[in-house]
Amino acid sequence: MGGVRYKVAEAARLAGVSASTLRLWETQGLVVPERSPTGHRQYTEGDLARLKRISWFRVERGLNPAAIREALEAEGVGDDDAPAAGESGIDNQVGRKLRSLRHAAGRTLEQVAGEVGIAASVLSTLERTSQGVSVAVLHNIAEYFGSTVSSLSGEEEADARAVVRAGEWRSWPKTTPGVTVQLLADGRNQMDCHRFVLEPGASSEGAYRHDGEEFVYVLSGRVEFILDSDQFYDLSVGDSLYFESKRRHAWTNRHDGETVLLWINTPPTF
Image (cartoon, rainbow, N blue to C red; front, side, top):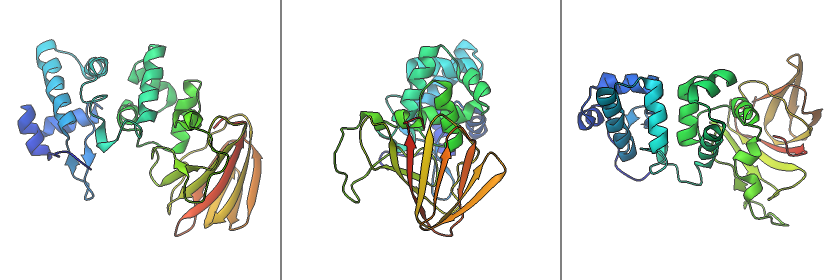
């Protein structure tokens, strides 16, 4: 991770506010700092620029948190020019696309978050970093905007390759902790062909549904699928599951190591 990082006290001093104020602004979704491996807040140069603008809007303009957030987005301070959490423009494309869709719809963070059923701070973090939400939440947000997770992740924009060699898979941006999605077929196709790699305990964190049909084959590990909230399927290596995507489905890695799945959706509605 490149660039200078500042601890809370240092960032507060440079921004001319107290450390408690920084923590308050974080709970309000105005700024979301990185976290060190030990869990301590770390502020980037982009965050500092954002903090100074927050302070100016608060003191000079008397804006409330919601108005400050919208003003910052309009300016792009500490946002488009300095992606948070060390994300590159490519890795942050999910957040950028979501923000663009929201602006085009003329909706505020609070409006979208309220209708999707999440906190505005969670949506703000997702737009700034492309991180921090479950697969189920990401799907619901994509559906809200009439899009799909695959489309938001840039899958349809990839140059099509007739052959994808082992280990040369392109990956989605790392939106969900513990879940890596790799492309087994590039481009705009009639099937979404994915290799899901689930870390121990990784799950969808909720059920979701969409049009189409799905096929899942367990390459390694063990996964539990729940369909329609009351049908449980414990799948091990070599097992497969086929179901209509309109059925509410959720899943969890039940293995104490990685679980790897071959996962196909058709048509590409996920």
